[in-house]
View 1 (cartoon, rainbow, N blue to C red):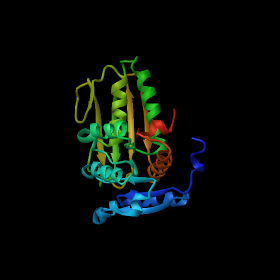
View 2: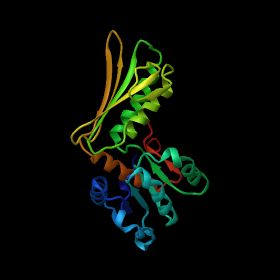
View 3: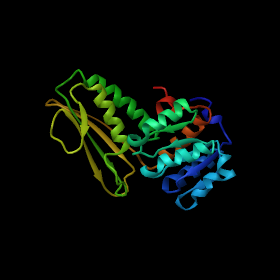
Length: 247
């Protein structure tokens, strides 16, 4: 991690200019970077502009159906991509892996860029390994997000659930709305403007062990995305949080 903060004056393009894009813009500028191009739904032709091509890295936060197309357009312009869009992996995961491993393209992808979530995820994996030895504990997960979030469970919940399933032999997969003990149940709640809460509970007759990550705002995600862009400028291939932070 040392040295990453000394990386200044990058040229960054933004793909998607919603709440997240605007916050990334502020943080990038505060860290000494320059925003050279902003692409949203109404100016798609700017992927071909000289300004966009001059970017070291493009940071992409859009919709699941748009993400893969955006990667292709950015790569065609010779620009590396950092993306937090979820929901494209099932359909296009293989093509993206091939592009990054065989065709020299670069994508830093994460379902969540928050440094706190990266730490939480490392704790989650470690705790699951321990709990594999204690079958008296049943495990379940709950995620809460703002009412504008349409997909469920969240990409972060799925990533955390996959870690648990991988390390706990008595769970064969995750599912929503299940009472079957062979599945890890994920519940979702949508209320207000909650940026994101993820809770994992291990419950036994004797006691309950709970770990929770509760985001105060989107700021942690935005800062993480800019740190990822700084990392991506110097690296190549298909990258993710665990490449950037060695826990």
